[in-house]
Image 1 (cartoon, rainbow, N blue to C red):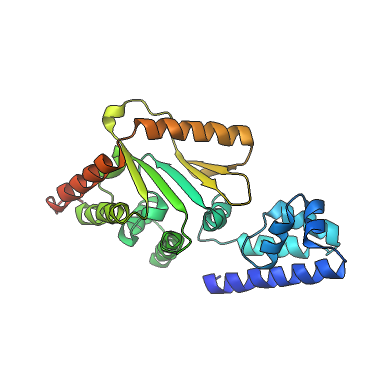
Image 2: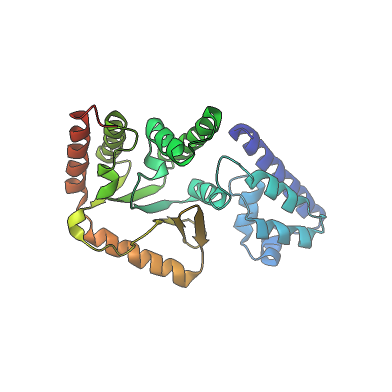
Length: 277
């Protein structure tokens, strides 16, 4: 489903929710109490600003006695095959976050990737897929990164292990472009980037990626990802542990200015070695 069509469908979801809520004689606050979210949330659902999670849609159906229509619409709309099932909800949350902090141990975070780098990563992990399949994934990733260009973009903080700077994904030209892109965003104050150098030794998060997201009117969440799996965490204790781990990474990483210099140096190294593949 195209991005514009998806938005129109979410707007229909919101309009239908408002109609059925008003028919039931409920205010936004009253419905919110019954489905365990705030009245402001209900208003954002109705305006297609925020997308409800599936369990919320199910509770709305129960309260409004709507025969599962909101659950079915929600399942259809979040079923975007450009993203893995375990990641689709994260994409929606990224669009709503006011702050995103990421740790990337091996490859550049999706929000910072260039099209050529994303294409190389996708092809490497899907060697038998069609060109169209790969390009769909690349387009989706570029759409995601658009949130960093919006006027209301979130505060974005990335910590990259030095591996990200050294492993030649797609060859030297692709790597040089990728690192220069990250450096340009950092120089333009669009993002804050730190590098965790090899010299830092043992890492507080030895495996997998970590993404922390904060919101204006909702509790923070954490997302961790390993091989072909991911987990969205909203338990306060686990989110707090994830935040503590990120703080340790931030303390061990090089300061932003030194990190920028290291990224620029690595980009120049790749520029000087055009034959690397």
